Length: 197
Image 1 (cartoon, rainbow, N blue to C red):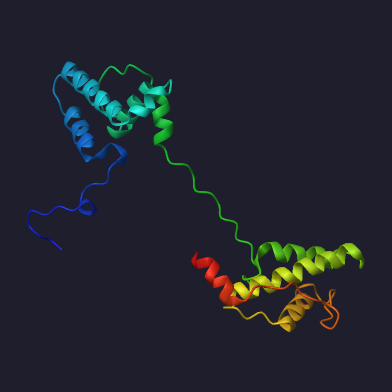
Image 2 (image 1 turned 120 degrees about the vertical axis):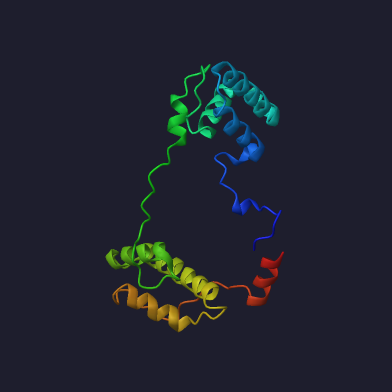
């Protein structure tokens, strides 16, 4: 939408450091283009003084002056030809973007159980039958039921949990639904009321 006289921020050039606002950025852009070095220096000092007044709480930090001059250097894209009162090499490190982190792309058969449950399934495959394994089976089955209820809009069938547990442990864990008791789970309506609060 183009209306004469209206200027939206989305149509303007993106700010380098938005916390200082567009007016400070305009001052920096103006100061870079000044002819005389003395005039540029005086203008830069005035801009830093304005920046300091914008965030008075930062004066308690020991290096706040250094940070202001670093920010001025970043906002000027390091094109400001003045006598810098501080070394601005650190500002160049701040201005460079870090390399993106690699996102772990672990493949799991069904996402609603999550990666941690599949790690438990692998552990259960290797464990010998006994009390420790029975405890882990109980924890896994109850968590599976909670996950099914959460991601399946409240339906968490006991047989589905038993079948999935057997399937993902390669048949090593067979849950006997006649003797196994799941933890009592709150009714779906109660959970919804809790979430609303």
